[in-house]
Image (cartoon, rainbow, N blue to C red):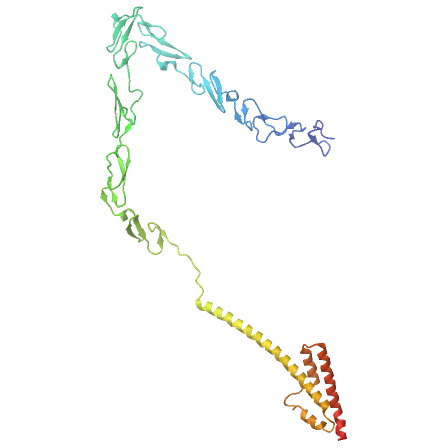
Length: 423
């Protein structure tokens, strides 16, 4: 019996109280499907699915499609708008600014108060403290007339039909009463460190050396006059230049002829020579490198075998070959000599037997003496003949004839005493 509540469809057990899950399912009761591997913000209804939650997309549900809902980045009650994967825009309420509307705006930065009034910043608002003779939200209404000479800095006063007045300011001044001097240099219009000069009617820039233009925005080309001589290359700088000289020349304008070897001194006793491609160092033994700055480590090489040792080895091999060949020839000759000797003995014995059988009894004694072989010369016994016969490779019929002739020979020897007695 499986664990109580174990899914009958997606779980099984091998022992009582177990609940083992089949492939694609998990949980204590095997009733939870396994999500696709790597699925971050998704769910599944079947094994290995990845159904993305709201605001998420992609194969692994890892792409934030609703950054505003998931992260709420906009502050101070700003309105958040999704503009793409992981991007958004905050629409700030009045009085706030910044990417997330986190910066409170100072309404006084725009100088809303006129006629010399002072501004007081509030939350999303401001107030103006007006000077005497002015009133209104921005102190824009004056209870003065041109008779009061309200315009400053040479401004001209004009009466309004509805009451009040207006000032026409001269160049360089602004404001309801021409009380503010226009600072044309406040925006830092001069580039490259130029000095701004406000002359009232206009602004000018005093440029640093090497620059020109109304705003000092032009870098003067110091190479325009080709100051580098002898094929030198000019590199423009700020209020200056640099010459890259060719081989054999030096100086600011490459006008001085120089020794190429002075530019590349050789080290460790090396000798410098002037080459068309540049100075070349000839290094002494034991050193190497462009300037002979590296020590050349000797390479250990095994000495070659002496020539005499090689020649001796070859001669010994030839001698051994000749000895082996000579031994083979001698052995062959010895075997052929043994065969010839056996054949000669057999022929001699046959001749003896034939002559004994054909000689009359009366002359047997004399023939016997003639046929006897001197003992000092050669002796052939039956035993020797038998031994030699074993070394001769003959046919079985030849062996039978040979044995028969030996029997006849022995018989003739045994009959000799009888014949002598008859004589």
